[in-house]
Image (cartoon, rainbow, N blue to C red):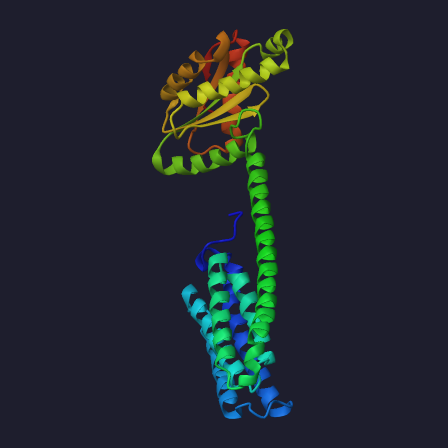
Length: 345
């Protein structure tokens, strides 16, 4: 997404919503400029007023149609309408009575519109088409004396058009890059707020949110248990081996336990050396069996204690977690390295 988007369909919805209104504005504004210049401003005697006003009428009709049907146009339609605008501008140059007609400058609108809404390849195609139409209008212009200056007029106009398109393309690319970076940063920030930075597991807040959802599901689908696990003598382990070793033990425990659990079990770092697990579809006996397997793979020959509580079906989240935590501390009190099932109540 850091690159310019490759299709109209994939551009931000806010940008897509602007396409029809801006296209309508361009057609309408160009039509009014032509009408005003023909009726009120001095113009070359060879200007064909009837044809110029007819060309302006096309813009007058196109503008409200583009606006009224703005929610219905497919992306490819704007490619055609932009090319159509280039044809109308070429005709204005041809019938405008002067090969150096200022109407040619309106090609800049085509360039800016294309550079903002289309991909680089599509923009290039629009500029090549507009340049070709303008070149044909200059070469075929009835004022033969002006043909010697056709190349100069064409180069000056197309150079300005190309620079304008390049500037808009660069600005759009920079804006979209910033949007992607901002979105990425937001996602990373949200992810950091939901995970434990050391182990990569869910943090306590996220785990409690998941537990609320699991309890709602358990009302319909069956039992659920909560297990609290705590590494035994972790402070002593830290004191003897250092905090970096303690961090490695926590990380490895998270890895080993995650790989032992079922895909839909939810393991989190609850705080410090304490971990919590949601075990959907488990009654107390099944939960104990799973917890025994977790304790068996505790890394580096260390042990852990665990408390298990089966949801009664009507207790609050805090009460369920509190029962599991009390069972954990009972396991600690009884000598550690064991699993205790909480009593109901």
